[in-house]
Length: 336
Ligand SMILES: C[S@@+](CC[C@H](N)C(=O)[O-])C[C@H]1O[C@@H](n2cnc3c(N)ncnc32)[C@H](O)[C@@H]1O
Image 1 (cartoon, rainbow, N blue to C red):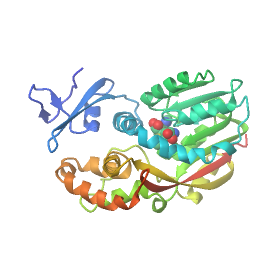
Image 2: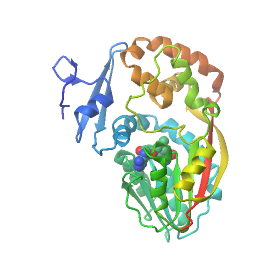
Image 3: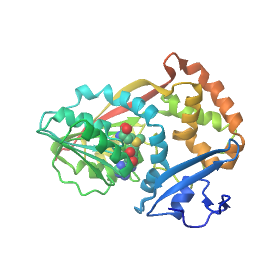
Image 4: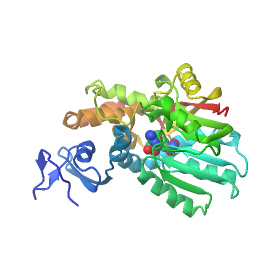
């Protein structure tokens, strides 16, 4: 299927070339299509199949069009780091055999799979995410694991018409992207039975998350800051760092008994320095600066790679490039 819409460049056969996935998405709403980007500097041709959906929610469209392909390419790095943050708290989660559980913003579904094992065949888990392509991976893994008590649903957590039947609602790094955090948290609460519990994991302060912040600082020496009106995935990874603000948001959303517990973990950002630099240029706040700088970033690519390598080399360990990360486990209750 060839992309429609207008774009500035064409390849030798006259097919349009989209410089960014976002521009392709804007021109191809509602279709599966192929994104082709020619990096003139390296001569590497990148082709990606992109599922372009139209939801009316710009953040959800951005997740599907821009972040799904990137996250899928970097799953082998991302999944391990995110897992460390839930692994530290999973054993103590208030789960019982037979519980009904909801995992929101479940991504590839690994936490939903773990939750399904914990509640057993008498219980049930729904993994909900706004990106169908992530859920496809979750369904395949759940089938392979032989789980019959887990279903995945593609939906916006903020507006999904939940029934108040869940004993427990979980989210690992999913709630920070809500367009309206209070409305999203309130809608999550509507899925809980009276007395039901909610646990969400969100990133702590930037200073304690060099794996997400250091490379951005390096790139900003050479590239402009991301413009206020740039397309984005929502408020972002550091939107729930402040316990006072989050407590207030949860209270306004109707929760009681709000508690915070700190989780620290060294995460792998690349099996070697080259991979760590490529990861940083693709994902997270540094990836955003690089992507938004467009051709300017590509022109300075060599310089940026050298500067990042110089900064990241101190984190090289025998197992790969390891950097500090820190999150909050936030728990709260639905009083009913
Ligand atoms: C950082 S990822 C975390 C994924 C997964 N929980 C994990 O830890 O691996 C954030 C997830 O939230 C999902 N998400 C963001 N906004 C959402 C919304 N309004 N409704 C449903 N899912 C959402 C994204 O699609 C993405 O899968």
